[in-house]
Structure formats: structure tokens, C-alpha cells
Amino acid sequence: MKNILIASMLLLASAAIIPFMGNIVPYGNARASLLNSDYENTRLAVDAVTRNFTLYGSFSAGWGFAPASMSTPGPTIVIEQGDTVNLDLVSQDGITHRFFVSYTNSSTPNAGDPMSADFTTSTTFQFAATTTIGTYKYYCYYHTLTMWGYFDVVQTGTIPEFQLAVMLSLLVATTIAAALANKRKYQT
Ligand SMILES: [Cu+2]
Image (cartoon, rainbow, N blue to C red; front, side, top):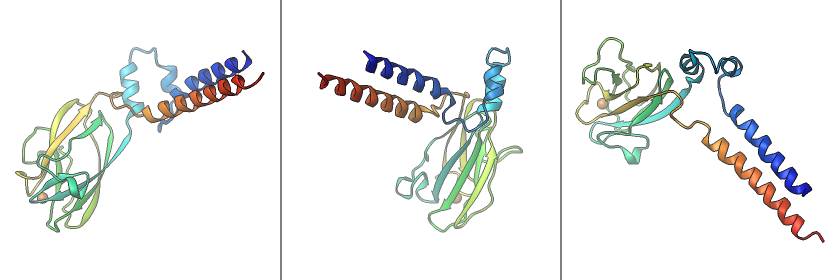
């Protein structure tokens, strides 16, 4: 009975910790204003995170998250509204490329479209993504036919940031509970 009590307390404790785990941005004020009418705005401001992607590019093969998986269209980049996108761009064929996102889904960049510098080996490019939900396209400025892919901006809170943390803490709690139950079984 005592062990079951301890196990339940552990489960409760881990459940209480979960909301505080993994959050990169300070969370205090946002929690206090959870009931505010501008809840969504608060979430947007607080939950914008930096997402890192490495994109390999080749004129003939397209874009890929790995050199072996370059394709046309390339991999879909999924981010949440207003996230900071941090790109490592690698030219896999030694040809000069230039990455841009078209918010008008046009193969030529417009004012306000994020665009990297030219890169023939590699470069990094960081930008704050639009807060307008939508499916856009990214391109190589020089090779728009082969080097493009989708750039999905989804609602804040859609991407399960803390799934791993949740699963790990549940796993730990379950393991402890099972161990306690097992120990109890062999006590006479
Ligand atoms: Cu290119």
C-alpha cells in the first residue's frame, strides 16, 4: 500500500513537472496570463523558438536534409508562426546557390522575402519567419526548377516540442512504479 502511494506521488510529481520542461523561453508571465483574452498573442510571443535545419543543395538533385536524400521538391520545412529559422546551407555540388523563401509562392524573390547570401561551399542564414500561417515555397535563386520545396508555417503550439520530455518522464515514473510493485511482490 505504501509503495503504491509512493508510485502515485511520483506520477503526480512528474505530471506537475512536465509543463515546465523543455521550454526555452522564460515562462512565468505567460502562465500568469493564460486566462487573458490575448492568450493567443501571448503564446505567440512566448513560444517563438529557434529551429535549426541543415539543407544540402545541388543543381541536379535538388534540396535535402542529408546529401543522400536530396530531391525535387526538397524536404518540407515546417515551423511555427514567427519562429526564428536558423539554416546551415551546404552546396553539395560546388555550384553557387542562394536560398530564399517566397511568401507569394513566386520563383522570383519579392521585397520582404527572406534570402540568404550566395554560397558555393556553405553558409548560415537566420531569419524570423512570417507570423502568417500558410504554405509557402523556398527556392534556390539560380535553380528554381530543380531546387525548391515547401515552407509550412503552422499555428503556434502545433509542433510537439516537448513530446520527448513527456514520454521520458512517464517512462521513468512507470519504471519506478513497476520496480516498487515488483519489490513488494517478493516481500513476505
Ligand atoms: Cu542553386
